[in-house]
Length: 154
Image 1 (cartoon, rainbow, N blue to C red):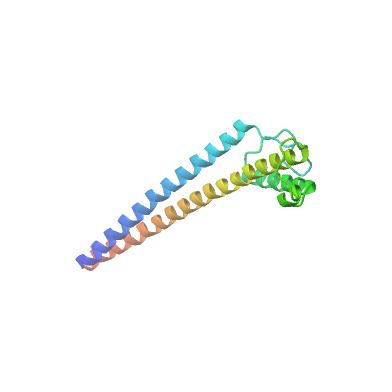
Image 2: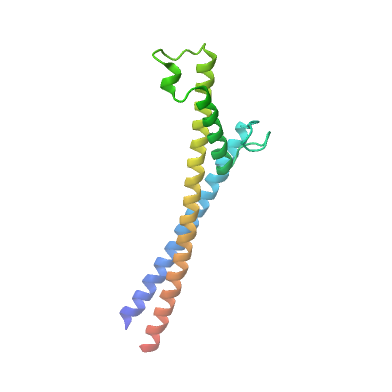
């Protein structure tokens, strides 16, 4: 029954590894989330447009960034349905206020959607970390039970 004890010990070891990895994922995901939020607050992006987050409120969460990005896209499409249709058969002209406004809207929209993706990635990392911790605890429990059962039999 020595092999049963060894298997129990190996399962406990896997559980410990899973808990440690889960804690790392939670820590990294959480720190990156806070770092992203801090960077967005430093940029002080606020939108005083209807349908966006409250006027004067700094956009610093996934939902706010998504709503603001969608609002900007909707307004940008009010200028022209697509970049190609904005230009027609010509080229981008930075002295044309319509071209400049459209380009600035695209830049801000892309910034906000990139933030949405980054917030989502941090949430995936934290969720994976939590799952790893739960799995590690379960594995540890199974390993301990198996180890104790093989000690009784021996």
